[in-house]
Length: 272
Image (cartoon, helix red, strand yellow):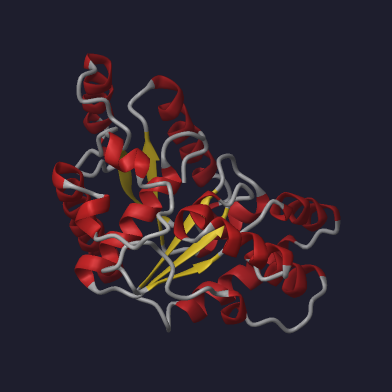
């Protein structure tokens, strides 16, 4: 989560999910909680996603039934198994999204269904924790009612940021929000990931150092560089490819180091 858009959240969720599956044999559930459905587009063919949206088989349809209609719903029936175009990352499932998420949020606020929404999200996460090793939630920019529920019910959150002034302001906004209503609970910050860093930019390097000087950010040691392979990873390939074909060389090395650190921080957090 970062209140600022354009910081590479969806691409990072994609890369972490595929690394967790390919190199750590983790069962991963990706939850697409963004009306733009970016991560859904990255993990499955456009034609398949469109069909699911038309057939009412998305997380939005699940929440409409559970929250607005207050009918018995099983989130597992909306999960799409075996997504990803990486042939050695075969343990990733997806709860896809669509544009109706924005309309759903309006109805939640208008009808004062926030409490029921939070219970629904909490139940989903608690049950998913019995099935999956890790659940990655791709949130929209800004703090919508749905995003707030995820942040209050999840165990942890990670904040990707570009090393620039506007993106870091998004971190400050989120920090202030986290400090409000502490009695309502909030996910623990695992740390800030410096993402989309230009290796040739002195300004990016300066902001990277500045972010790391603030211990509250708990910055991950590994920054993620803005490179062509990572940008191209957002496009779903009609032909399966290996992990190293999708994330070659230094890019794959960086993602593996980042994922190793992520798992260690999660384990430490669970221990606390």
